[in-house]
Image (cartoon, rainbow, N blue to C red; front, side):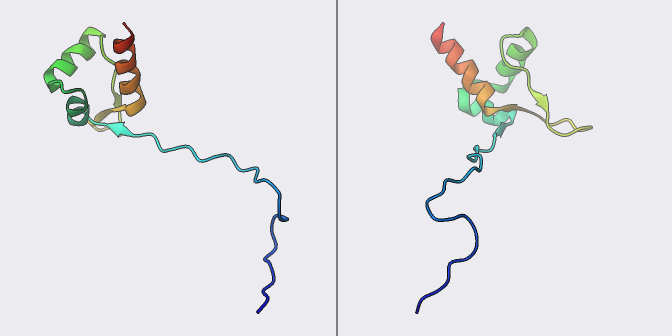
Length: 82
């Protein structure tokens, strides 16, 4: 049985859609501590001293903080380079 092709792009054309970017991942303090194999108190002290990326408030009016995963990866790459 022959079926008709649905209307849309002609065959052989290239899509102009932007490629999908992977979602950004938020890491909470226990995740960062496990990821870096550091204690939570050491990470908090490093943040206060300015030696570690600042966390951001995840929810307005809340007390939940986190870090973007790429910020933690950049921190590790900077430390490895020095």
